[in-house]
Image (cartoon, rainbow, N blue to C red):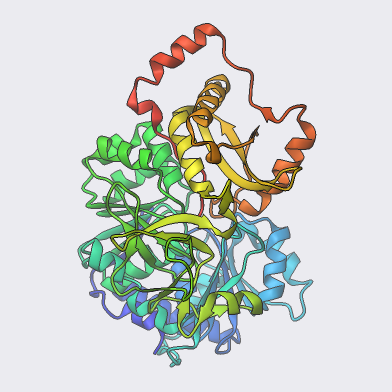
Length: 533
């Protein structure tokens, strides 16, 4: 089989496969371009199994170059084109890429890096003029058949987000694409008539698997955008391209609520809103339903699973497996205790590139176990409880940092932009909670008062001992919180602080009165806390 061929075998010749800006390409046109792209890659010396990096904004050209690598028998790897060159170089070295595809904007910087590598990878440049470089190679290339590969041969890599440490290369097999559309088909009713739009970018597994791959596998239309998403940009994209299935992340859903964009999407013809990439706060789901008349379907997936493995379509945030996903629990673990789970699905990856310990820990006989913990409910559903380090035993009781974050986020409302909780060790050797928070500009005093009131309202064993107010929290390239940095930030803040609790100054009495009035408005409680799966 060949994964790229599988993705392109369903769509009708005249149907639109991809829209990007003012450009469109039909399935017939995409198949021809990918076949020519594969020939161009082979002409550059690409051998089966060799890796090629695609480093550019999302576009039709991006997809043609990416799928062309796979069609030719190579292994494609999309990388965030906003990644600093200092971070790109180590990735190129470790992955031992044979070529890199980019646009004019980054060409000279990438050539500088490539020239220092041994062996130096080919740097293939897509020029804006479309008359030289890659476009000329495509025009001159002949159309070739897809390279035959085994189902378990590598087809593409995805980089993990690095929320808890160094990113890893996740190796996905050719067979991964066969059921990439199962979530959308079974739960969203995906058909060839649908139009899929993901605000996340194609280097991110969420968008790659659940929008691009799922859409192509079903013969649907996939909508891409070169620009980075903002609430206003999303509104423009929806108005121009009329998607029927919409994929985004909680942080952006929150921003769209704040900016009034959610109301514009209420009557835009979108059948389903999907949220993934981080935990969807209950108040954001409620606010979205009140504004648009629809609540999001919240999904859980990872770079290692490509597709969404668990989902929630009700208000209690509990999860159950998506269609075709098998679930099992670790033997010998107390069913009442937080525990890791094991997942099996056709889209689960082969494993990691040169990460032996992580491979042994997370993969076994076609099953994958994420580092996150879940609680089993009596009805068989799961409650997400964070990662191993996020589930703490305090005063003899289990506490998830996620539960604390959600409680504080809901109480602080729009006065808070980000909040993260982390378990730390106190001077007496006990496990305690620290909170790092970012207040909304011009609302620091309100945020401080609400935070203090929210902490007092928590059960004693869930109350954080430290609150540190920061200008920003560290994020990954995919917009997730870098949780591995939180303890260091806590220690740095402790050393700087003169007391254990360091919020902004409390507001004056007149502001307290205004605060009491504002908290009576349910809309003021809409907030997305920073939280990555």
